[in-house]
Amino acid sequence: MTGQFEPTQDDLQRALRIPQDRPITLTEARDLGLSRRHLTRLLELGLIRRPFKGVYVVGSLPDTMELRLSILRMVVPPDCVVTDQTAGWLWSGDRSLAPNSHLVTPALSVYCKPGHRLRSRLTVSGERQFSTRDLVEFHGLVVTSPLRTACDLGRLLHRDQAFAALDTLAATRSFTVDELLEEVTRFKGYRGVIQLRAFAPLTDPRSDSQSESVLRLRWYDAGLPRPECQVEADTPWGIPYLMDVGRPEERFAAEYFGEEFHGDDRAEHDERRLGWLEEEGGWTVVVARKHNVYGRHQDIVDILAASWRLAEVKRRRPA
Image 1 (spheres, rainbow, N blue to C red):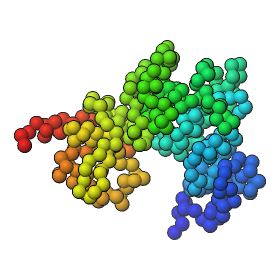
Image 2: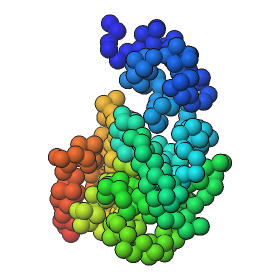
Image 3: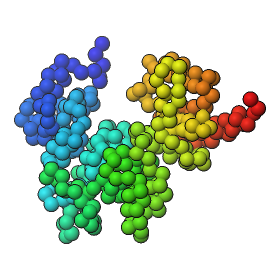
Image 4: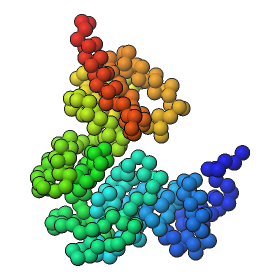
């Protein structure tokens, strides 16, 4: 039986009208015979994406720098600087987006020259002061550099997203953590600088995803000592097991199990490997899922703290 969110033949045929290699505007979509209702249906099915208001791309088109540039050229007004989350998206792609951001079309973050301000519900705009080194002219666009973007997002976003943004932009290897720490000093007196100062020394470009970064923030919230990212454990199956964050000295680690890679079909496989790590390898591995890390009822901070105390007791026991 065909459900509400299963594509019909008509849906597939409409999706095929959209160019498979480039973004299009709403006007182009209408010229192809696609109404707003059709586009909304294709969005709900995941057959197309809407990176910004009035721009559509087929869902199968990979997220690349070239695609992001072509999208931004369609939506960024003349004489404006691409900033904040839009700049973060350009430099690091979909990884920079918050969980479930694919369900909400983001506003365009741009700033204009002094004396000009956009008045649009589609943009987050205003005036801002930049030094010469803050801006990069990149394929026809003026964008805040990865380092300036990191400082702005580290100041201005909610703490979870700010912490993750610093890791994500550091992972582009456009700047080092030492350069970030030096840059932070120039933002004295700026809004959000206290948060930026706290998070900058903890930035780690080895974090592999936004949820791993947030899990590491929860680790710090639990009062545990500084962890490493991508901790390796030797295994009998020949390939080291990589854990998101951990302390090799104490054989204590935490893993974020997202639904995409750790669904029900992987449960037995995951349990078998974690079981060996704990029983034979001597590791304590805390598994966190979405509900543990995000939302009003998140409990991973308490779980980490309690697990660490139990692991300490085990380590003190005579062999």
